[in-house]
Amino acid sequence: MKESKIIIKVFGYVQGVFFRYTTRKVARNLGLTGYVKNMPDGTVYIEAEGPNDKLLELLEFSKKGPRHAHVERVEHKFTQPTNEFEGFDYAF
Figure 1 (tube, rainbow, N blue to C red):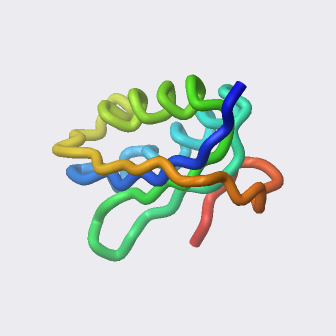
Figure 2 (tube, rainbow, N blue to C red; figure 1 turned 30 degrees about the vertical axis):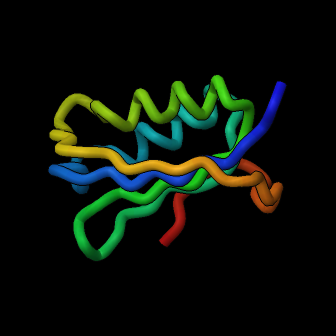
C-alpha cells in the first residue's frame, strides 16, 4: 500500500464546533499519524500520513466535518511522507 502525506486546510465555520476533536478521532480510527490545529485566520490545518485510501477518507470527512461545522471549502495537497509523527494529536 502506497503511503503519502496530505496537507488539508478547511475554511468556514470550523472552530469551536469540535472539528479538531472529531478529526483526531477519525484520523486515529483510520490509523493515520499527524496533527490537527486551529489557525489564527479561523481555518483548521491538518497534516496526516498513511495509506492513500485512508488519507482520502480523512479528506472526505474534512469536507463536511462534525455536525455543527459549516465547511465552505477545503484545499489539499499530497506530498512525500516524512515519517516524523508518532501518532495523531493536536498541535498548538
